[in-house]
Length: 230
Image 1 (cartoon, rainbow, N blue to C red):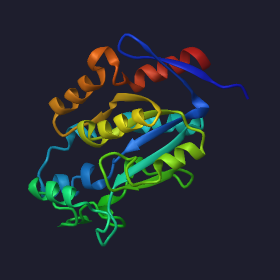
Image 2 (cartoon, rainbow, N blue to C red):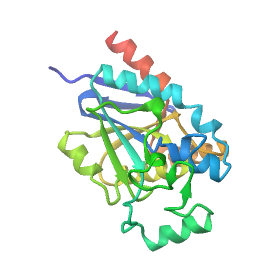
Image 3 (cartoon, rainbow, N blue to C red):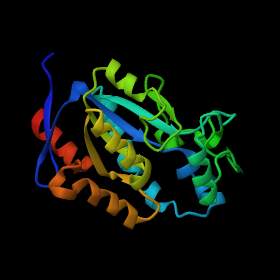
């Protein structure tokens, strides 16, 4: 089969990719952050509406990826039950923020592997063939097997989505840049608890005329796909 090359419009430019060499990365759409009974909503009282608003967009995007055999990978910010992979820096930062890693909430221990809070939300439940990766850092590429999974599958390009835009999404995007992946952030499939923080992260990617990265939307991706292949 010949490669299915696609050019997706971004802010004034185009992002070209090969579908066969592209993975969809769904970052941290887990109960701890996105479910009303999760730690962020129930224990911290954060406003979840901005995060939950992107769920329908992600459902459509994941369905498209499954239909056209784009590799889908879900990450979950989560630590070993004994917290042996929790750095002292992160421990202190999360305690200062009032959300200690391992604290007990309504859905179990916060950001701990195997707890209900660390599972991907039901609306986006992975199917058996899809990959789930636990990550102990903001970047999904730190102390995880994500890079080896991507290299093993011959992936060169990433569609990056998930939460939160200014934290784990941006950290992963910039890390992926530095190790050679070409990444496209789909801004209607990302969110932050505060819209200002979401927009600030987008502006970082667009800074210096786009030297940091590319930003588009799932709607533009679908339009480009339909124009070329349907």
